[in-house]
Length: 85
Picture 1 (cartoon, rainbow, N blue to C red):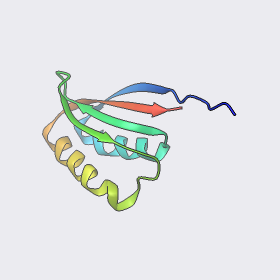
Picture 2: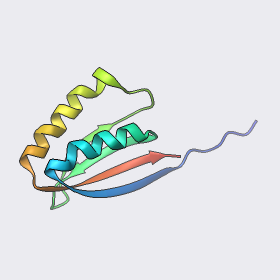
Picture 3: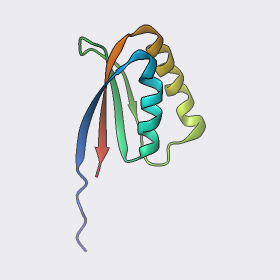
């Protein structure tokens, strides 16, 4: 029986600080996400959130709180999303 190799794709989104939390929540609900990386305007990594299938609810509360704190400090950022296909 042959197994299908999983591939990873990367997408980037530029968002303002006030839209950061909403965008991350939307991405998480879409599924198939392995990792979310948030970078500031200069490209410096601020936060990396590794995700796996089945991560829901209370497990996401601390990272989402951290994202809210980051959003309050920055005006614009880039979200890099790694998806598994």
